[in-house]
Image 1: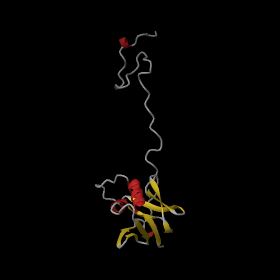
Image 2: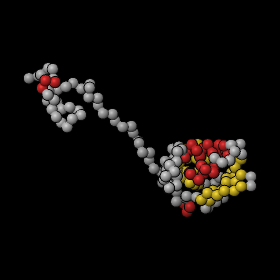
Image 3: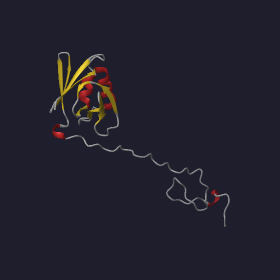
Image 4: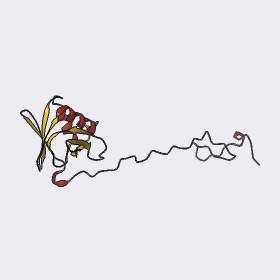
Amino acid sequence: MVSVIKVNAGEFAAAVKFSAGRINKKRKTPFPLLIEEQTEGHITVTDAAFHKKGMDIAFDGIFDAGIEVGGRQLLKITSTYPAEAELVVCTDDNNLLIQHQKSKLSIPRLDKGGNKTKKKPLPHKKPPTPQPDLLEKRAEFDDTWGFSARVPMPADAVKNKDK
C-alpha cells in the first residue's frame, strides 16, 4: 500500500509536538505515534498507546491506512521545516517518507507486518476517594487518634463522659 499526501509543515509539526508532548530522552524505547485518516481530507496524529492525545490536520491526496512511527524522530524532523512549507508524505510497507523540495527523509515504521501497538487503558480511570476529615468527627470516649497506632484517647480529652 502506497499513500501520498501533501500537508502544511507548520500544522504537521504542531500536531506531532502536541501528540508527542515531552519525550524523556533517557528512555531508549521509541515513543510510537499513530497517523491515520480520521475523516475524508483530515488525518489525525495521536499517541499509539492510549489514543487520547491527538490533533487533526488537513491534507490533499490519497491516504490508505494508518502508520506508526517513532515520535522522537518525527518530532526532530518536522521541527526543522519552515511553517509555511508544503510537505509530501508517502508511506510504503517499510518506511514513512517525508519530502520537501529536493530533500527526502525516511523514518522506519514501527508497525511492520501489522504489529500495531495495543491500545492501553488510561492509568487513572476514576478520581481517588478523599479520606474523611477527622476534625469534623466528634470525639468518643476510648476512641483512637487518627494519626497514631491505635493508642486510645486519654480520659481527660473527652469533655462529656457518657456513663
